[in-house]
Length: 229
Image 1 (tube, one colour):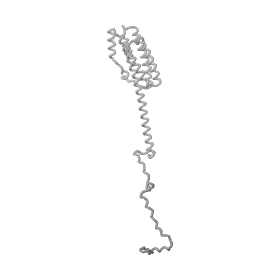
Image 2 (cartoon, one colour):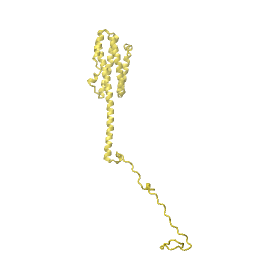
Image 3 (spheres, helix red, strand yellow):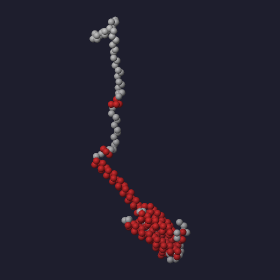
Image 4 (cartoon, one colour):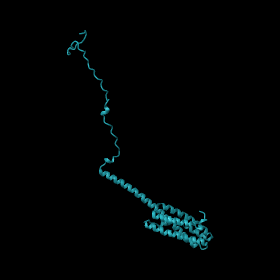
């Protein structure tokens, strides 16, 4: 035994020749939280403020589907009725313009006693063409349940034209005034036919196309060709 060596009385001395006892070393403590990420729960997704459709009960889903279907049908109804109403208004505008030309032609017949025979013939031709178109278009509107109000028919009524026509007749300027008036009105009427044609049905388009061609032929009358637009 070496001097100053402390002997633990509870531990027997090792026999001579034995290897020295090795005191086991403690492993370093694991760092706190090294594997916490494995144990921790995954972050939960944020919940939407609106419930998912599958989370709703069947009665609620059916009610929601019914509301959506109703909204879609309502929008389609508005679009269809809106287009129909717009197209109807354009057809009524055509009839109103045609009616005013016929009215002035009737008045012109009474004032054209001293005008040329060519102008008198043009008045008769214009009146006959427009009157035929009015009958066909009015019947078309009736067949399609499109009501035409009195105010709608009189939308183009202009009593000033009557006074101007009478004054032109008294001043021996009837032919010039009437031809200028008729060409201007026929051009405007033709434009109304084109506008109505865009939203009309198949049979309506056929009528409007035929009327357009008739007015085009009327505008080629020698009396009107030389009149400024």
